[in-house]
Amino acid sequence: PSPRDLEGRTVVVSAGPTREYLDPVRFISNPSSGKMGFAVAEEARDRGAHVTLVTGPVTLADPPGVTTLRIESALDLRDAVVAAARGADIVVMTAAVADYRAAEQAGEKQAKVAGDVTIHLTPNPDILAQLGAEKGARVLVGFAMETHAGVERAAAKAARKNADFILLNYPTREGTAFGGDDNQVTLVRPDGTHEDWPRVSKREVARRLLDEAVRVRRERVPG
Ligand code: C5P
Image 1 (cartoon, rainbow, N blue to C red):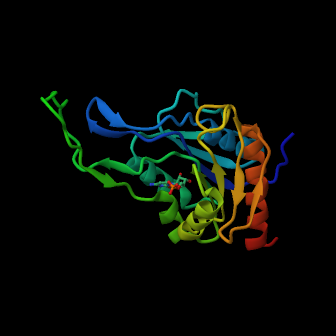
Image 2 (image 1 turned 60 degrees about the vertical axis):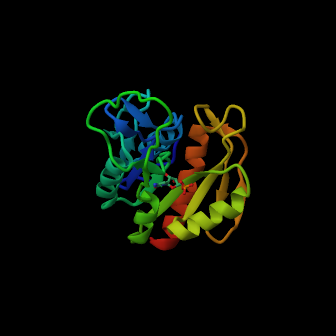
Image 3 (image 1 turned 90 degrees about the horizontal axis):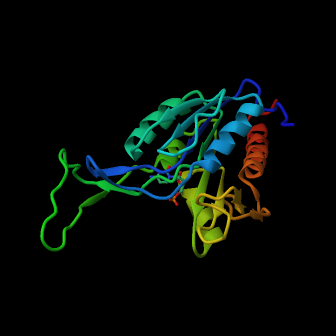
């Protein structure tokens, strides 16, 4: 059974991929399944929190007892998360936000042309960094997927974005990360200290994540 250590707290979780439309029928995206974020939302709910889950397009059903907002683009994700985060105690960014969107989104389906085409992309805002810049007493948690120099890069990322910790995962390990039911992550703090967690279910990763978030919160807001 889950501890009721988030009774009365507000937790915001982002999940899934974003879609960056090039025209009405084509988009740039990634294979994020949303399972990790949904597991965090469900675990927070079972620990007594009011939970808002902001998710990109995934096949998972809305979890009972969780306020679920469905968005597509990174800009819409930002607006929904930033609004929901205002009253939140803990924000967990598991969403696989697309780094770029089309500089101009065509209003009509683009016809095929002979030869190569060039797509002009422009960077999306970094939502985690924006939340970190206006953090207040909130606990802020990110995820990162790296193929090399993971701990150093994740620690630098946590420091730059003012996140309390980042869970680092790897795209290549079988049964984990994208689409799998398990995950094998490394907890990385901005000061570079880190802990390897064993391969466990995404729900168990969610439990450990929230244990750590509660610890950070107790240090920040005693009593
Ligand atoms: O910099 P990178 O994309 O590796 O950072 C990953 C973390 O930052 C994740 O928690 C992700 O949800 C968040 N992120 C974000 N906005 C972006 C890109 C990533 O909030 N534009």
